[in-house]
Image (tube, rainbow, N blue to C red):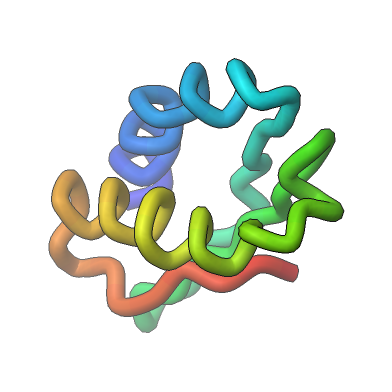
Length: 73
């Protein structure tokens, strides 16, 4: 499942990088929780939580339906 999640992240990563940010995959748990770290401009952006849920989580769930949640750590 980790490879599928990484593949989904690679599809949205250019959008984050265009704004000076990025996302790093830290862990995919056995119960379907994906842990990521927002870096660069995304790390301190006031819209980061919306980007995480409406952008990153949505994109991952479309590619990997077994993912239950994406959280930033």
